[in-house]
Every structure is written in C-alpha cells, then in structure tokens.
Length: 314
Image 1 (cartoon, helix red, strand yellow):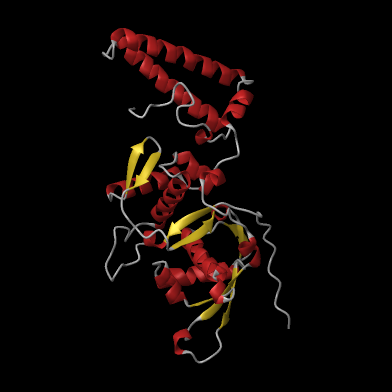
Image 2 (cartoon, rainbow, N blue to C red):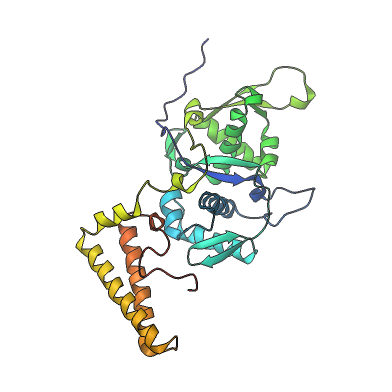
C-alpha cells in the first residue's frame, strides 16, 4: 500500500531564519544550571532573534518592539516582559534605544535554524487554523535538523523523552509538541525495527518534504535581513513625497542652527541649544513614525544618514 500523500502547505521557496543556540534553552551544563536556566520560551526566542540579527549585522542591530510584533507576531507585553527579564539577569545590555548586545558567553555552534515564516504561519491542526506555540517551533526545528543531517539518511530517530532532553522541554510538553506536529501533518513517525537496546522506545521521525525544501541564504549576513535598497535611491523616491521632503528640510534648518549656535556658545549649555536638541529629538521621532507607517525599516539608511540622527555620544 503506497504511503499517504503529504498535505500541500504552499510554503515560500526561500526564507531567512532564526539561529537558535541550544544553550538558550537552559539545558544543564555538566549537570549544573546555567544563566539561561528557567527562562520562558518567549525570552529564549527573543534572545535568539537578538543573537541572529547582531551576528548578521556584525554589531548590535536596530530592534524596536515593532520589529518583533510585525515579523514574529509577538505582543508588546510579551516583548517588554522578556527584555525586562533578560536585562535583570544580566544576559543582555541596552546599548542605546532599541539596540542590545548579549553580555554572557555561550556555545554558538550548537544551534537550530528556525525559519522566519514559521512564526506567523497558520497551520491546519486537526481542522483548525492556528499558529505553532514556541515549544512546537523548537521541537520542529530539532526534527528538521535531524532530517537534514546527511549522516542520518534523511530521517531522525528519537523518542519524546530524548527530544525533551535535547531542547530542555518537560517530557509532557515534548510529547504534546510531537502530537500536534503529527496532527498538522508536519512530521510523521514510524516504529524503529530491530533489537538495538539504544533505540527502544524510539520512533523514526520524517519532516514534511515542503518544509525541508525551503531554502536558506547561503550565508547569515545583513543583506538577507533587509531589502536590497540603495539608501540614496530610496531617498530620491521619498523626496517626491511632500511630507518627507518637508521633514528633511526642517532637519536641515535644525542642524544648521544647531551647528551655528554651538560655534557661538562653544559647547556651553544654553536654553536655545537645549531647545534645538529637543526639536532634533522630535524630528527623529517624526521620521521613525513616517518610516514605520510606510513599513520601511530604519536600518535601510546607514547611521548618520539623516541630520537628526543621534551621534555616538548621545
């Protein structure tokens, strides 16, 4: 009897991905807890996103709350709580507004790759359309890595207990994750033949071929995570918009006035200088709002491109 056909998923041909270091799961190291032990899954995923973007840009990347909302479907309450927990634990540090670095050391080589589209994708689970919970994404990422291992012959042999241990999930959560992935026809299992004691209680896991067929960029870098825009060309197109043009002109006036006044007062504080600084901040916020409204990522433009940009000393 031929195998049942997989359901059609209609997935993208290519996708960026989140590099999720296993260390973030808080898996014990040499039998001892780590700084990541006890973190909520939402914290682990936000940390993985910071890790991925900072690695791609080779420096702290611009990560406003709206990025997590729009790209990964997270709520602002979840994001705020995660940043608070990660900061209080001393795991991350805010470099400046919306820029963060990871302060602690960890194993970066042992990681999963979780496709970006998966976070907001609706899957047919038992006849209902729903997004996958973080535990399911983590489990699917592990099964996918196992299937992509050339030494394994395109399959992954494990058990619910071993899966839970691999990504530091409770056995019951790992079991629920596997069952939901099977219900969504994203993975299938079959019993392992043979008398090998090491494989007792294990199953052979096969991930949906369409999921495995989604291609990743060959190299993790910033070009994969922002549109292929030339800043000057984009600026020229935006200058056709009177709202943007007016904003740029007001920045020029503010900047020239600021420079002129700095030369006069020679760095001394003055009410006029503070007024121009406040105006510059207001212009910066107005620019952020303009770009956000048009779904244009701020880092399409290099730091210092606009006259209202913060200097390194800000």
